[in-house]
Length: 168
Image 1 (cartoon, one colour):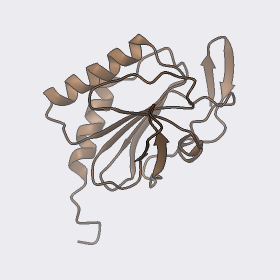
Image 2 (cartoon, one colour):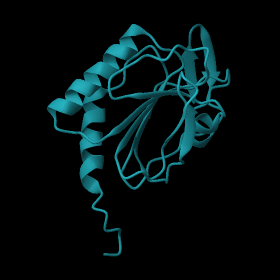
Image 3 (spheres, one colour):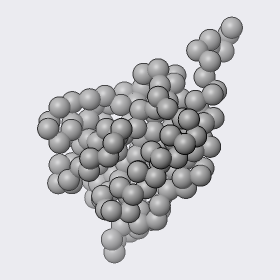
C-alpha cells in the first residue's frame, strides 16, 4: 500500500492485520514511561488509532469521537492513540490512552509500520473477544477518518459479541 506523507511516497512494511483475525496484545509507553497494554482480548471493545503525526485536526477528531460515542451511548470502550516514538508530543485527550510503540510491536503485529519507521494513519476496532472487527488505513494522513463509519462499526462490535462463543 502506498502512503503519501509530507512530500514523500512511502509504503507499508507489511500487510495490515485483516478483519476477523485475532489481534495481538502489545505494550506501549506513556509520556511518563509507564507501560500499558492494548489489543488482544480484554473484555471491552477497543478503538485503536495510529498516526504518523499529531496536529490540532487530529485532536479535534478524537474529541468529536468522544462526544459522538457518548451521545450514542457507546461506553465502556478502550480508546488508544499510538505513535511510533517519543519524538512526538502526546496530547492529553479525555478518556484516551496515548502511547509510544517503543518496541515496534504495534507497527509489526498490526502491519502499519511505514518505510520511514513512522506509523500509518490507521483505525482498528477490536471486538470484546479481541478479533479485528474493522480497520481503515488512510493513504493520505492529512485527511480525517470516516467518523460515521467508525461509529457504526463500534456499535456493531459492541453488540456482536455475546460471550457465549460459537458453539453454544
